[in-house]
Structure formats: structure tokens, C-alpha cells
Amino acid sequence: MKRITYIYSSILLGLFGLGMSSCNDFLTLYPLDKVVEENFWEDKNDLEGVRYGAYLQMTNTLEKFIAWGDIRSDAYTYNEENPNTSDYREIMLANPDSTMGCYDWGGVYTTINYCNKVLSNGAAVLEKDPQFTATEWQQMKAEMVGLRALNYFYLLRAFKDIPFTFDVISSDEDVRDFTNTSQMDVLNALIDDVKAVAGQGKSRFPADRDTKGLMTNTAIYALLADMYLWRSALREGRLNVKAGEPVYTEEDVKADAENVIFYGQKSLDALALQNEQVINSSFDRGTSKRDDFGSTLKNAMLIKNEDMQEGYTSNSASIDVTSFRSIFRNGNSEESMLEIQFSSSDQRKSNFLRDLWGYNANKKFPLCVSDEAVKAALNGTIALFNEDCRAWYSCTSGNYMYYQLPLSGKSESKYYYLTKWMHDYFDKNTAAGTLYVNIMSDHAQDSYHNWIIYRMTDVMLMMAEAYAITGNYAKCRNIVDAVHKRSMLDQKTGLSANSDNNKAKCINLVMRERLVEFLGEGKRWFDLVRYAERIGGGTKADPREPQFYNGSDGVRDMVETFMAKGAYSKLKENIISRIQNRYGLYSPIYYRERSANHYLLPQNPVWNREQGENLNGGQNNNDE
Image (cartoon, rainbow, N blue to C red; front, side):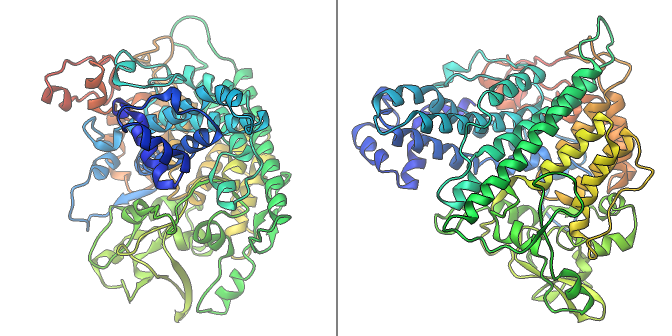
């Protein structure tokens, strides 16, 4: 946040790269470090330039979103073949530290400030530019409110209590006196802000990559559903109080869950309308058939894997998994609600995906997949593990991977790999009855895969969790099974059992399905945090909100139910001891951010090792 001095120099450089003509004129008039703003906001091109700049800036923060939202989870194990000592290894062992650069949130606040700039100047531009209509401003405003909320939502899920403002930040002085706003207060403000513009955004844009790459109505509704799901968890984990009168009720929790269902359905409806408009336009996506797989949700038609089983049973040399090809390899599918765009045409690369999960014969990458966790999610059966096509590209055994030559027999063959973000195909013809994953690209080649923020099955499983909270267990199972069936060879086998007939079992069912469906998509640790927050409990008071318990029961339950089923079974008690309470579920604040505002930002009370402060002669201002 401190690095947003001369913010417009960053914006203008970004816009210059995008070829915005209005910026070329502007750059000839003023030095980049002395921007006179009142002479900039003249017409809608200026607004649109900064608006696009916000998305461009967001591409620089995605690896941090993965570090915050995924890497600590049960889904991964560290590749010990990697000779480098990585911060990620320490994070995965529940040893995060405030000196780690991945906790530098400055880039996210820069994105937020771009949004604030557009929102604070839009009304004035509307008065100045006769070509800029009220409808265009309403749609742009909804888009920017949604994008700003999305970035704040990442921060509050990663750090809990955060600095929060809707005001424009123009210099370091504007943030020197900032302190934290509580997670619940931020979340309440974001929900109210986004609700006020819900349905006022665009349904689609002329270009398909903008339709899927910018905040449209379907993405705004999906974000609202997600935020309500989180608020229901935060409230439920605080129903019982340590002192004073109860703050939240069961009715509050269920009301939030009902809103998840309401806005989730709105998101599905908006996506169906968007896809219908695209089909009726000149753009032809050319995707295969779709099916509801028995789901009783409206407008929840999933891409069907038409020839997958036939290819598998006939030992085909190239099994076509249509959903994998459409969603991940091609991108911008009918199921996509929001994905950050990368392309070779403008040299915007997503090499962070290659660096985290890539493969090269001479380079070992930090993240491997915990096959124990995946098998546990799939009822612990080898049969389901083999028959669920998601395991083919999300949990590939090194013994059955090819890159120019098979890995079998090499030291790295003992690991399992995520190949979702690589160019690969599935081959059951090279060894009798054995499916191989053939990797067609490695670390030496640039990646241009889009990064998916929201897609249809994400919203469906949000709604399934909400149905579990409201007591409609049959509906919850129905949705989970529909998502699961799409990826099974027979496309008929679900995940649920008749015994999944209460709230706890149904939430567990959703969590297991989400692990497999979204492996490698930056969501799993956030899911585990939400699960732990929903349970809450403990015996000691919350260190910052002493009327509540500190959430230690939720921590233990989450670790024992999920983390201990994966690669960290032997470290279960160590992880519980290190996390301690709900604050241990969140990340430490980067030490330079605290020193920049004279330590007014309190450090996370669990991760309070302030090496950076000592290096800089600062004082410690941690919670006890």
C-alpha cells in the first residue's frame, strides 16, 4: 500500500502498453511523476483507460492470491527433489513469517486504488463528456464496485483484519495513519456496496475475452454469493459468546445462506443469458453438448464429456476430455464467469502457473499434489481415483507421465503432479490398460493460460453448502453428485451416500468435492479457513474480540478432518499447535507495511515474529 505514491505514473505506463491514444496525449503534457489530475479526467476514454489498468495490475498479484488461498492446504506436498529452499515450503509446514515477500499486499491495494479513482471521477466525467451516457456510467460503476470488492475479499480472507477505505489514495501521507478495520465490518460494507449495484453491470461485452475477463453481472452475483457464504460461516462460529450477550443468531446464519442460494441462482441465470447472447452473436465458441447430470438447479448445464468413456475403454491414443479442453486448455468456456486474461498477442504471460506446477526434466517445481488427500476426498477408493478424469490432470502419478520420455524409474516419479495448466493429452494406448498423461510443453515455454476466478461449478457448490446450512440435505447431495458425475467415466456415479443426512456430513461432502474440482485453482486453503471459522469454539477468549471464543475448536477439527488425511498426517499436532486459534488461519502482515505507517497496523497475534522490525529499529506492537 505504501508503494502507491505517484500512482498515475503506474497507470499511465500500463495504459501506454495497452495503446490508449488518450494517454499518448497526456504523456506529452506532463512528467509521469507530476500528474495534474484535474486535467486528466475529461472523457470516458480516460475512465476506460484506468479501468483496464486495474485488470492489468491484477495480473501481477495472482501468484500471491494462490499463496494466500491455496498453498497452505491439504492439497499439496512440497517437492523435496527441488534443491531450493522456498518460502512456500515453510508456509506449507505452518511456518509463515512476516518477512516473506508473498505477504506484500501493495499490488492489491494498487488495484483497489485504480477502482477508487474511476469511481470517484466517473460522475464528473459524465457531466463533461456528452458521448458518455448515464447507462454506460452505471455499468462501469457496477463493474468497478465489483472488482474493488473482489480484491478486498481476497485481502480479508488472507489477513482477516485489514486497512480499508473507499477513498482515493494519492500519496504515502494518505496512509500513514491507517490501522485495521475488523474483518466483519469490511465484509458487511462490501456486501452492502455490491448489493447496491447488483444487476446494473453489463451482461456481455462485444469481445468474448472481455465478456469473460471483465466483471459482468454473472461475476458480480457470484461474488455476492461467495461473500454471503463467508459471512454465514463467520457468524455461525460466533454464535456462542465468551462474555456478554449473543451478537448473532441462527436466523442470521440461515438468512446469509438463503442469500447464497438467491445470488447463486442469479449468477447462473445471468451466465445463461450471457451464453445465449454470445451464441446469437457472430462469435461461435463451438463447444460440445451440455447436460444437467440430474441437478435440479435451473440453468446449471455443464459441458459434457461426450467421448471420454469410449476413448478410455477402447485404449484410445488420445482421449478427449471435453470439459478439460474447453475450461482449461481453450479458456473462456460457457461455464466461465470471470477469468483473468493472458495471451501471446499482447505478451501477457501466466508463467507463475508454469513456475508453481510446471515440469522440466532439469528443474523440480515446488508444488506436488497430495494423492492421499485426493483419494480421501474420493471416498478413499482407488477405483474412483482412476475413474474420475479430474485426477488425470490434477493428480497425475509420476509413474504415468510422459515428457519426451517416461518419468517412470526417475527419482521424481514418486510424486503426483498437477498438469491442469499445461498442454497435455491422455493416452491409454502406450501400455496395456494404463492411462498415461503426455506433457506437450515444459518450463522452457511461456504460459498463456487464463486464471479462473469464478466458474459455474464453484457457484453450484457454494449453493450446495448453503443448502446444507438451511437443512435441505437432499438438495445439497443432488448438486454435489451432479458436479461429480460430469467427470466420471460412466457420468452416472455420484459422490454422496445415504448416510450424508445431516449438516456436518453434507458440509464435509461439499468440502471433499471442492478439493477435487478446484485443485490448483487457488481456493482450497480459503475453503478450509471457512470450514474452521464455521465451527469456531474453543475455551479461551478471542485476542481482539474477547466477547467471542478464539476458534481453536474449529482449527483442530479442520486439521484432523482434512489436513491429517493428506501429506501432513505426521505433523497434525505440530500444525494445530502452530495455528493455535482462528488468527493462525490467516497470514502475517508484511513487516515493511507495518514499518511504513509506524507500526500502527497490529501484527497477527499468532504470527508475531517481527524479524523485519528488529532489522529496521522499529518497535513491536503485537497483540498478546
